[in-house]
Length: 132
Image (tube, rainbow, N blue to C red; front, side, top):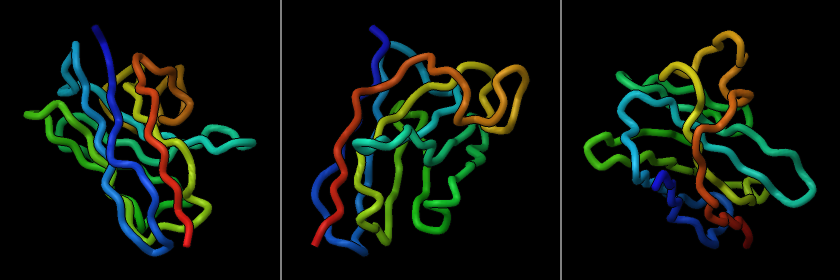
């Protein structure tokens, strides 16, 4: 019933762009904070970007700040991650997740920062490979 489906990944050369999509079904994203995460083999899961409900305020990890932009289209129940100036170290599986708690990305008790909040639902991810 409750499901996220990510799409848009693929092979891209360094410096290139990709747009990832996260489509939700079984529930609405209108009032939910959505986080994008990535995980590469041998590395810990990393929070990439978070977008709040409402006005859509965003939080970006330092590693992607200025290169990635997260947005949402509530009419389509979809969240996007626009990726530019991709680097080989961006290679990972990217997935989206509905964050437990309030619909904003700021720190909140008892969870802490957005990337430490539990997931209410998440997708299986889409592979992004950055290579010449």
